[in-house]
Image (cartoon, rainbow, N blue to C red; front, side):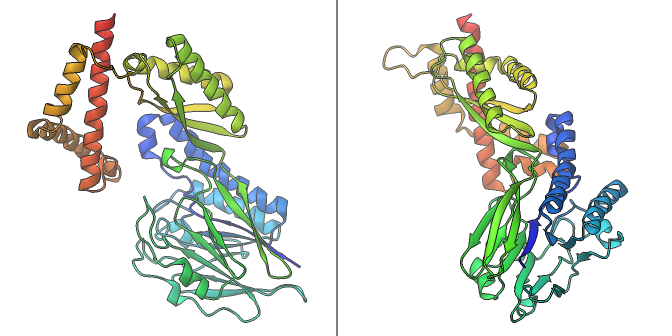
Length: 421
C-alpha cells in the first residue's frame, strides 16, 4: 500500500507583520490571520486526502513565540490529525529554535518533534506495505553555520527513507545561510525524499532515485512573497516511485500588477484601463483575497498627472477593488514617463531635468543631505525594520539613488502640473 504525506514548512504561525502594519494596519491583520487560515487548509487537506502523515520542516512559529492563543490553536489543529489517525513530524528551524511553545506544549502522542540530535523514526505498517524511515534534526540555536547532513544516520536498508532538514542549501537571495549543503550531497545520502524548509520560494528537483523538495512558504506575508503558495502532497507508490503534487493553501495572495497607460488618451481612459486590469486579475485568481501592488508604466503625457494625483489614483483602485470584493491595494507606484521630444526646445522643465541629472544627483552636498535624512529615519525605526533602508552599504547606496531619481520625477511632475494648468 502506498505511503502518502503532506510536506510544508515556514508557516510562521501568527507572524507579527510589523513592516506591513506601517502601511496598513487593517491589511496586516488580514495577512496575520491568513497564516492560521492557511494552516487550517493544510490540516483539512491531510484529512480529505487521508494521508499517513504531515511533515513540517521548520519555522512553524516566528521567533520566541509565547502566545498561549497560538499554542491552543496549534494543539486543536494537530488534535484533529490525531483523531484522524494521521501522524505529525516536526523539526525546528532558525525562527522557532527558541520557541517556548515547541519545547513546552504537550502534544498528542501522534506528534513527533525532533530534537537537536539527529533521530530516526521507523513507521509501523501493515504486513506487505512499504517500510518507511523518517530522519529529522532540529536547530538547537537560531543559527546553524555548518551543514547538518553529517549528523543524519545512514538510510535504513530496504525502507523508503525520508529526511527532514531546515537548510538554505547553497544560499538564496533574501535568505541568510543556514545549515548549508548542496542538492548533490543530499542525493548522495541515499534517501528517497528530502523534506526541506527555510527558503520561501518553492523548488522541487526529482530524478528516479531521489526527490529534493523545498515547498516554499504556504502563505505569503508581503509583496516579496508574491504568487501562488502551496504545500506538497507526496505519494510513495508501491513500486517506490514518488509523485509530488502541489496543493494551493494561501488564502491571501500577493500579486504585482503592471498597468501600461501608453494608449490612454485622458484621465478617464487611464482609470478605465486600470479597473479593467484589476478585474482581469480577480478573474485569474477567483479564490481568496488578492493583495496587489500596482505599478503604472508606459510612455504617456499623463505621466505627470499620475504622479501628482497618485492619491486619487489609489482611491480609484481601492474603490474598484472593494466593489469586486476580494482585492486589496498594498501600494501604488508610478513609473510612467513622458514621451521624449525629438529635437526642438525642451522647455524650462526639460532644462531643469537635465541640470538635476548632470549637476545635482552626483554632487557630494546633495548625496550627503539625502543620506542624512535616511540615517535619521533609520534611527527612528525599530531594530528589526532597519534593513528596509539597506542591509549593506551597496544596497543602501542603491536605494538612495533610486529615491533621488523617483523624487526628482515626482517634483518635476508637480511642476509640470502647475505649469500645464
